[in-house]
Amino acid sequence: MPLSSLSHLLPLPRNYFKDTHTQTDLYSLQNYRCDNMQLTRLAAELQEKNGFASLAHLKQLNLCIISSGNNSFKLPAIIGTGVRYGFSLDITDISNTHPLQLTPKNNKQLQCKIFDIILITLNYDDFNYWYPDTKVAYNLHPNLEEIVHQLAQLRALLSEISNASIIFQNIPRKPVTTFGHNDALTSMSLQYQHQQFNQSISNMVKNTNSYLFDISSIAENEGLNRWHDERMWNIAKQPFSPQFIPLYAENFFHVVNAIKGKSRKCIVLDLDNTLWGGIVGEDGIEGISLSIGNPEGDAFLSFQQYLLHLKDRGIILAVCSKNNETDALDVFRNHPNMLLKLNDIACFKANWENKPNNISAIASTLNIGLDSIVFIDDSPLERDNVRRYLPSVAVPEMPIEPSEYVRTLSQAGYFGLSSFTTEDIVRNQSYQNKIKAEQVLSENIDLKQGLEAIEMKIKFLPFNAIGRNRIEQLINKSNQFNLTTRRYNSAQIKTFEDGENYYTLQVHLQDKFGDYGMISVLIGKIEGTQLTIDTWLMSCRAIGRNVEDAVFQHLVNFCMNKQITCIIGNYLKSERNSQVEYHYKQLGFKQLELEKNHSWHYSVNTMHREKLPFQILDD
Image (cartoon, rainbow, N blue to C red; front, side):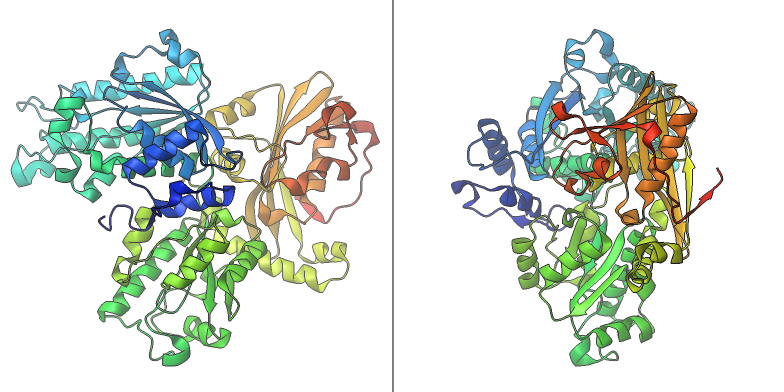
């Protein structure tokens, strides 16, 4: 399989389907690629529930696909890939229907189910308008402009009947020119019109509850001549070559993972022969390969530059290396060509401990889940060790040639975003600040004195348009301190924001080491004199700082001002939120006996106020 496809994944072991698989085995599936037959087998076994010891960890995902083409050839692969990504799919296939001819309010298939995701796919051959009138020059053919307008109307209609996240798939261009090498320069050419159309689709989904599936870029990476199979389109209305079905399904779930907050957010890096050539403990700082103009040195520098780009968009960088710490630190501090610096690394582990233990320690220090981590190492032995002992960590199969590192990591699709916020830009630094603050806390025997020493400032705001993207991000990514783990998209969040019967709160935190941005979200539904907490979550960066007490005091103050006498708090157990099982009890709530420990009651007039170590900032 070519490097540009799925070469970061190992082939699925041949005997995989002969054994009964545990939940651990299913977690590790993300590190393996499957061909179309294997994905179809996974889909069949999911349906029959054969061969799996437990499917309890799979999340139900109701998917609707609207397409004018034939979807049947790719549905098993999508279901099988869903298993690899932890989803049990129920697919409603509305195929052989032009999306622009669909009337959602009159379509029974759209009305009979509650969907999580709606995928809308158009095909190149859906249009009779690609050939513009060559007598007139314009940016986009008027008929194509109208199609974009109709797609926006379809999105609005779907949003009226469903809270689903809507994904629009753009269109790979055909490897055909009308003006030869001047196609990209000529507004009347097919290539120019196609590029403008895809850009219009991108513009349409911005700042909405819609998302882009950029299949056009994937097709160009693979090669348009290989992607398009005119014979299969004419025979079966399959819009791309069957050889790319696994790649299509894989990339679809990159988008789904971003929407559902399941993208990875931390890269743990080996050092020798991963960030530089050679072994610093043997070759010394002057002997490692990082020189400009040297092919190998340039390759490692390109990889470091790419890692810096990832850090700047919010990916946490950490180091896990079998090395003498002084040797490893020396390179970061003193090598003149080293692009990565120590202040780019949130957590640094260079020792002779085994790497699974060190990676677990890094996850604990950063307070993130192992399923948030991608581990990069040139050693097959170390990669296999981590896969074996930490199956939820993503471990790409790195190529032997370092010049291919960037492309391998880029096309693996680990770090998808549903939105980009200012908090993403400073995330790496905020984790470093968190470690500094925890060092101060550890130096104080009295926790209260320690919290006062880090000089925390807190700000409370209702939901607003400025914070909406970050609110959506927190709601869909926070798992550990999350009382209900309910997930909402931006349209639903705006409903809470505008609703008179909802109490909404976004919480921002600073300390002497830096600004952490928005770190907590709360949504409450008001019914008469009662407020029920629908959602309460907090970023792992703020755990252990009494932020929850400050939030609760603010909530109680609101209730007292609104003559609300009772607060109901619900806890819905998930795989990762056990640490907050007794959160409400610790705040003084009383258990509602008939609710099996999941529902708690608080009388507002019983609030006991204590001074908390925060300076409250004005709105």
